[in-house]
Structures are given as structure tokens and as C-alpha cells.
Length: 163
Image 1 (cartoon, rainbow, N blue to C red):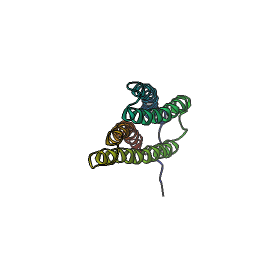
Image 2 (image 1 turned 90 degrees about the vertical axis):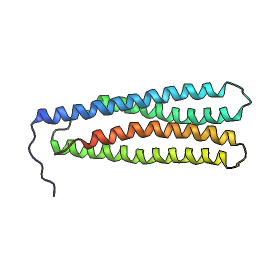
Image 3 (image 1 turned 180 degrees about the vertical axis):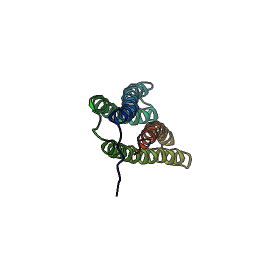
Image 4 (image 1 turned 120 degrees about the horizontal axis):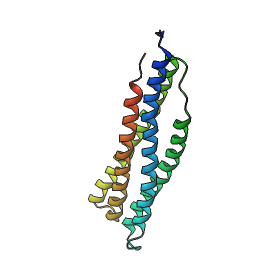
């Protein structure tokens, strides 16, 4: 059974503002990562049009970039419009939901990083076209680590909200 202690309205608003500010900055970071990844991925596909390793890395980077840009835009808009909850209990429940979402994403990020690492390892173990495996694996590993940083900060920020 949860027991909610009375909290002054200004404390709820202040704690919400701090969490929202962090989440908003993370969404802007995701948006920026997406835009830069799209540009970098396109750039990787240009040099040596016949170099398939660059094309693989560019395609992977652009795919992550498009997704991150879309999520970053929608998240930036949503956090910009979000209003403070009325009670401490509502704030804590909302923060726990945010921590859960960031935590699930963090797990996916670890999966991306592991997948990229496995592809990089495969490139050294004699697969066909090892340069493509290395390039694609490196691109996925970099994206996974970058996203993990964003999601870890989100989890930590959301978990600071307490009764």
C-alpha cells in the first residue's frame, strides 16, 4: 500500500520542472543525434561509390538517424507541452513510467551494442566480406553506445523523483 505524504504544490512543480528539463534536453540530444546521423550516413555512402563497406555503414547510420530524428522531434514537442501533475503521487507515477521506458530502451541499446560487437568479431573470424561486417558492426556499436548514454541519463533522472 502506498502512502502519499502531503507535498506542497510548489515542490511538485519544482520537481516536475527539473525532470521535464532533463527529459527535454535528452529529446533534443536524440533529435540532434538523428540529424547528424542522417548527414553522416549520407556522407559515408558518397566516397568510393563501389566500396560496399562504406555503403553498409552509411545505410545503418542513416536508418538509426531517421528513427532517432523522428523520435527526437516527437519527444521534444511532447516534453515542451507537458504540464506538471497535480499531486506528488501523480508525479512519482509519471516518473516511474518514464524510468521504465528509458530502462527498456537502455536494454535495447545494449542489444544494439552487442550486435555490433558480434558483427565486428565476425569480421575477424573469416566471414565473407569482412569489411562490410566490420563497417556495419562499428556503426551499430556506435549508435548503441550513444543511445545508451541518453537512456541511462533518463533512467537516473526519473529515478530521482521520490515521495
